[in-house]
Image 1 (cartoon, helix red, strand yellow):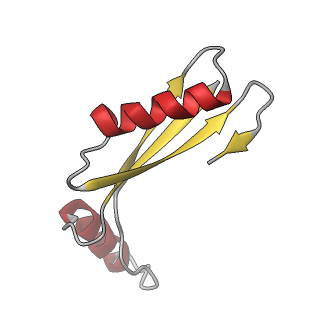
Image 2: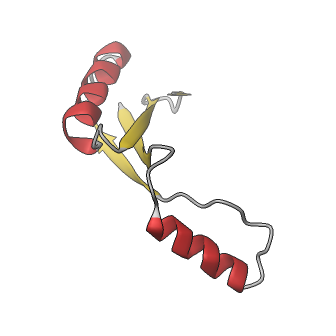
Length: 87
């Protein structure tokens, strides 16, 4: 089982790095770019545990360490050995 945790800043939290990227993209001629928010992606190899157990454990990891609950949200995607993905 593999998990991908996607961590993003909560709406309303300032994102100076995202603003800098957005400004740079517009300066380079990509005027269609609006708001830019940066985040992080964490890929985990979980071994052979059930999907339910993987979801439980990865949610716990996100709450305890991978995301700062004050300013960040997270979502997860699980992929089993057959490549089936769920969010």
